[in-house]
Every structure is written in structure tokens, then in C-alpha cells.
Length: 314
Image (cartoon, one colour):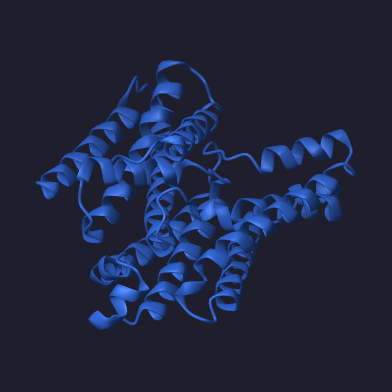
């Protein structure tokens, strides 16, 4: 039954992708198709990466309320953009080679995450709570430093920072997109190979280890995949904090399965579908350009509050 639902989710994504690509298509067909397919690919890559990463992170943390953004990925990205503009100026920031900037930002985010995970998980998977709390504190610190630095910018440079730190799919470089897609494929493949181990890891360290699972190693590998997926999606388009919570929650609700072999591709498909369908509605039907991420964050925030405030069933 869950397998059929996964196939249905994939069919919905294909249908929405076709609508997004072909709706009201006009001449010059080749040029417009090229632009639309590039944007479609970026929407799918980012949605799939964030959805997959969130399921992995929630399994590691044993908490469906959390997203990878809790450990400060978004705050670090904003801090990097702010410091680049502050040190180079608006003209210098605009002159940076796009591919080099993308590679450097991805590397910094991955390395920072791996250092954080490695330092805080030296005692094994039982240190997950300490990891989450430290990530929250570091996120607050980085946001504070970024806010302080932004006060030193003139209005034009501040506008550049605001634009650089707001997720946008309108001008994604194809070379960067190809690199991001390749890293996403590697991350998905690695996550699917861990699926059976993650099923056991979700039972908890105390239960999983007597069953023969090297729990601490699986946790570290899963967090490494999370770091790569979130880093590459954030460096590509910018941070989208609550998309993963939406995708993961809907995957659990629709598939009604504990098997990661279904949850991981399900969350990836749902994440991509949310972005593609949302962009289709706002761009094709409503004629808007920059509202999608705001709506996604708003709905994700409402879902987070609902999950937090919901009373447990007796």
C-alpha cells in the first residue's frame, strides 16, 4: 500500500513538472523551455535535498519537530554573505566568480557541520541533545554577529545582503545546478543504502545496539549526508528553513510507514512537489515572482506550532 502511494506521489510530481514547463508556452520556444527547465531542475534538486536531509536528521535526533536548520546552517550562510559584502563591498561581492563562491560556501558549510558533529558526538549517539542545543546557541550567536555587521553597511550594500540571503530560484547557474544535482544523487544513494540501518537506529541506541547495529557510526554517516545535502541546497538558492518539516511530516502522514526505504524518496518527492506546485501557482497563475519562500516558511511555521502544541493522544 505504501509503495503504491509512493508511486502516486511520483506521478503527481511528474504532472506538476509538465504543467510548470508547458503552461502557456509561447515563442521563442527553445529559449523559454531552457529557462523553465533550469528553474524546474533547481526546484526539484532543492526540494529533494531538503526533504531527504530532514528525514535523516529527525531519525538521528529521534524527534519529528526538528529540521537541520536548527544546528545553524541558515545562520552561518547569512553570516558568510554579510561578511563577504562587508569586507569586499557591494562591487567586490558582485564581481566574485559565481562558481568559486558556490564551491567555497558549500565547502564552508560542510566543513563547519562536520566539525560540529565530530566534536560534539565524540561520546557517541547519546550526545544528540547536546548537538541540538549547541547548534541553537551557535545559530543565535551567528545571527547576532550578522545583524551587528549589517548595521555597518550602507543602504545599498544592506540591500545586496538581503537579496543574497533570501532564497530565490530565478537566476540559478547551470554549472552550479549540475554540481548540486550530482551531490544530491550521491546523497540519495548513500541514504538509501543506509535505509535498513536507519530503521533500526530509529528504535534508539539502547535497543539498536543489542541487535548488532553500529549505532554511533550510522549516526555520524547520516549526519554527514545531512551536512552535504543542506549545504549544497543552501549554497545554491539560499536558506528555506521550514520546507523540510513540511516534506517530512507529509511523507509520514501520506505513506504511514516507518521504513526509510519509502520515507526518504517520499520526502524527496514531496519536497520537490511543494516547490514546483507552489512556484507554478505563484508564477504562472498569479503572476508573482518572490512570494513562494515566504509562503513555504509561513506554512512550515504553522505546522511547527501545531506539532508543538498538539496534545498527545491518550
